Structures are given as C-alpha cells and as structure tokens.
Image (cartoon, rainbow, N blue to C red; front, side, top):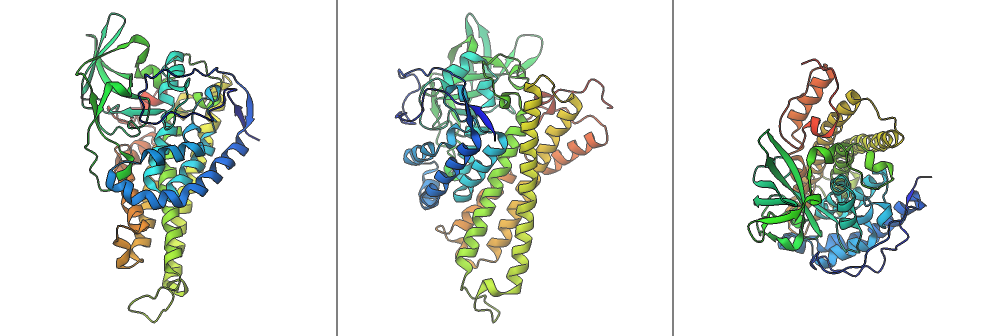
Length: 454
C-alpha cells in the first residue's frame, strides 16, 4: 500500500473562483503531516474523472472555440481532485506518487486532450514552488483555491524577461512571457527572467501574483486550443517582488532550498516527474481516439469493399493490432519511467541518492522516450483517423480533435525527437551531451558527473 501525508485542514468547501484575485484575504491552512492510503485516493479520483469524462468531451468543441476552458469546467475538474495530485500533503494535497499521477493525467486526456494538458501542467510543475523555499510553498498552497495552483512561463529559453536585484527584493521588467499554460487559472505564475550581475547571466524564477499580470489574447493554434496557454505581460510595465519570490533557478532544479516538505516526491528527478506525466497525455488521447473509433465503426460499411461492418473486416483487425502495439509500447515506457522517478525520489529522501552519472542518463532517457511516446501515439491516431472516413474531419467528431492535439504534443519545444535521440546516444557512447540553453538542458536538471569524456 502506498502512503503519503495528508493535511488535517480539509480542502473541501474551498469556494474561491479561479478568476478571483490572488491577493484576496483567505484563510490559512495549518500544515500537518498525516499518513494516508494513496492507492485508495487515486482510485477515487479516477472514478470521479470517468464520471465527468462525457461532460468534458461534450464541452470540448465550445472550449476550443473560446480558446480556453470555462470556469465551470475548471471547477468541475477541481472537484475530482485532479489539481491536488501533485500538491504537498502538508497543505491538503493528495501528493500521489508520480506513477499514480500518470494514471490520472492519462484518464483526463482520454476525454479531452486540452483538459489533460491543463492537469499535466498543474501536477508536473509543482516542483517549481517546492524548489523555491518554504515561504513560497506556504504562499502557493496555504490557502483554499479552485483550479491549478501553479503556472510557469518562458523559462527555457528565458529571452524576454529581465530581473534586477534591488533593496529588499527584485525588480522585473521586459516580457511578454509566452506559453503560459494554466496561468489563466492559477493564483501565481512563475516567470523566467534573466539576471546579470556582472559575472555572467543566470536564470531567476520569479513568483508573480495573477492580479499583477495582463493576459494577452494570442492563443490561436491548430490543437490544444482550450488550454488557454496565452502570453502574459506585467500589468504596470515593471514590478517589484520581495526577495523570497525570486530564486536562482539552479537552486530550484537542484532542490537546494528547505521547503519544509517531507514527502519523497520532492526529491524526485524533476525531468522524470514532468515528462513521465507528459507521456500520459499522448497515451490518454490515443486511448480516447481508439475508444471512439470502436464506437463509431460498429455497423459502418467500408466503401470500395463488400464489408458491411467495419469491425468485421480483416483490414480493420490488422490496423487495430498496430494501433494497440503503438499505444501499449508508449504506456509501458511511461509507466516504467514514472516508477523509476518514484524510486529515485525515495533513494534521495533516504539520504542515498543515485550516482550523478545515472541521474543524468535517466533524465536524458525520459526525454527521448517521452518523445517516442508522443510519436507512436500520434501515429496510432493517424491510423484511426485515416480509417474513419470523411465524416471524421467534422468539428463535432472527437477523433479529428485527438489527431490535432496529439500532433501538437510532438511539436512541443522539449520533444525534438532527433535532438533528444542524439543527446541520449551521446551519453550511451560515453560522450558529453550538448551544452545549450533550453528546457532539455541536462546540467540544469541532473547532477553532472565528476568525470566525463568530451
């Protein structure tokens, strides 16, 4: 049985709207560590998601047109518990294992890819505030909130935001910050900003309240349309934030600051956490497309043949077997990476972390394998789409949305399959990976081995 802590302050009854200002006076939770059964918790959450699923699918076309989920959908998702799965147990989060979080992201994405994306971001970026120290943790999680707690924007590369150390804190300028998934609903967005104090530039993650930001209407895209991943800028051009809200991102990724949290997940490799769950999006979308194909194909004739029922045709059986193999391969790979992420977190929490060379290689492996998961699932959906007839291109048909959403994942800046393949291959050949400033920069997320062949 898996157990984790649970806060004694219940989250039920949190009535705050996801669009209310973050500076509103709120009751503070009391952080208390209590063990509870996460195996049972994840099953309850999954049951609630399955019950909500048909509604998510029904709302998806309207959400796509709006370019964002409705506040009603955010509240309904919140009621299932999906926004708490990666939140600290000390603050009423369920703090599921990464392996359990993978199941939740997959199930949500099965019904709506954009909803899966929103839950993925809300779960997998909790390491940012957790790595920013105890005061940020209390600020983000210490109050009731409806919706995702965490959003991040423009960390890799951080080219537009600037931050300067001043008396008592930081002065932020620049922008806009792009691809701000979940920022429309989260109380804080962590902005990537470049600092330069004369001895070289470095990245600072700055926690900014949502009412200090202006959100731009620039999310006009081919897929994942309802994620509302808009750009944002400072409402007043410049913004002062207290010192504790700005943290050298090397300290965040290196887990160097005391956050007061006891769970082993806070010692888990950040790339393993984020990208194992990212694979769950692709898997869930593909599973949903397969379910929809089986539903709509029963009794449907195949033009150009004598088959009166597509599901009775051998050509369909061959195609379904290939689809299954691609989805199953992605699933097994993602599950293994999530479980290994949990194991490495437990080792680190026990004071016996894995050696740096293995951690670097594991991080590179998760990245390239997640890219393959996205590729295989997109290919599986392509097969289903191609065998679904011309009606599958209609806006009301979920398969065409699955096809677009899955392709968007393969285009994510962190999932350049060829670049990731070369980097992992270099490590396999005992060569140093490429040193570049990007989201997949291994030396920012995994300890660099003391000796390395270059």
